Amino acid sequence: MGACSVQSEDPGGRPAASVASDGAGQAALAARAAHTMTALAGGDLLVAGGCDVDGCTSATTSTFVVAGTSVARVADLAQARDAHTAVPLADGRVLVVGGFAGEGQPPLASAELFDPETGRWTTTGSLQLGRGGHAAALLGDGRVLVVRGWIGPSTYTNTTEIYDPRSGGFIAGPRLPVAADGLAAAPLPEGCALVVGGQIHSQVATDRAVTICPDGRLHQVGNLRTARFKHGVVALDSGQVFVVGGTPDDATLLTSTERYDPATHRFSPGPDMLSGRYKLTDSVVALPGDRVVVAGGGEGVELIDLSAGRSTAITQLEGGRRSFSTVGVTEGQLVLVGGYEESIRLSRTYGTVPVADL
Image 1 (cartoon, helix red, strand yellow):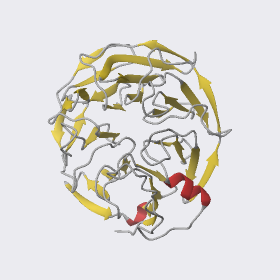
Image 2 (cartoon, rainbow, N blue to C red):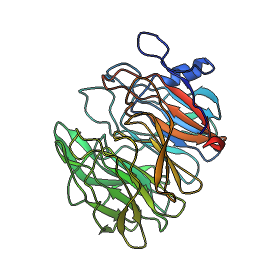
Image 3 (cartoon, rainbow, N blue to C red):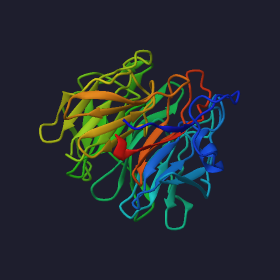
Image 4 (cartoon, one colour):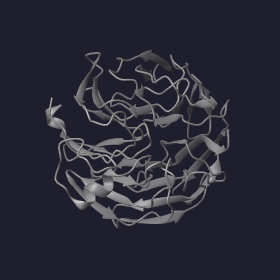
C-alpha cells in the first residue's frame, strides 16, 4: 500500500504528519471543512466553500481547482457557504446550491454555476425554499434534483426542487413521505435518482429509500438494512449505489455498508469498515475494480474492496477523527482535503496517494 504524502498541523502549528511540498495553495486548501469536492469533466477537482475557521462558525467564498498534485485558487463564490451541495452538469459546469453562510444564520436559497472554461462563478435562479444539509443528484434529462434538508431550528422539509440548466430556474418536485436532513442521493443508470436515509427527528434516523425520476414520479424501494444519516453514497461502475457508514442516533458511528441494486430495488450488505464513520459528504470515491475509498468521519483512510469483501487501511493521520473532509481522484492521484477534529478545530490536512499504489 502506498504511503500518503500529507501536510497537516494542529492549531498550535506543530507538525502532525509527514510534510508535503509547502505550497500556498495547498496550505490554504487544507484549512477547511464542510466544503464540497467535485470531479470536473476534464479530470480536475473543484473544491468550493466550506468553513475555514476553527469552530466552523462562518463560511468561506474561496474556491480551488486541484489537478494532480497542483492547487490553483480560482474566482470566489458570490456567496460564502458551507453544508451546500455541488453537482456537475452535463455541459461541464457545476451547480452549487444552498447551505449556510454562518452559524445561527438561516439556510441559503441562492445557487451558483461554476464554468471550468473561465474559472468563474455566475449566479443562477434561487431555490423556492432555502435549505442546508440537503442532498442533490443529476437526473438523466440533465436537470438536478434537490432533496429535503434543514430549513429552521429542529425543522426539516420533505420537499424537493428540480433545477433546469436551460431556464436557470427551480420548480417544485414531488414530496417525500417524511421530512429529513443529513440524507444522501445518487444518480441511477436509467436516469432516476436514489434518495436514502436521513434524520427525521433529532438523533433519529430513517431506513426509508425512494427513487425519483425525471417525469416526477416517486417510487418506494426496499428499505436500508440499517437506518442511518450523515452517511455517504457513491455510484459504482456497475450501476449499483454503495452506501457507507453514518449514524442511527448521532452518537454511534456505523461501520456497516450496503449496496443498492437498481435491478431488484433492494439493499444487500457490503463489507464492514475498520472504523465507524459519519459526516461523509464528498468523503467517498469509487475506483476501478469495484473498489471504494472512504476518507473522513473516522480514523484514517480506508480502501474497501467489494469483490474481496474486505476493507484495508491506506493511511492513518494523527489528530483523530476528521469530519467533513473530502476525497477525489485527479491525474492518477487520490487527493485528501481538510475536515475538522472532534473539538471542531480544522485539521489542516492536504494529502495525496498515487492510485497505482493502492
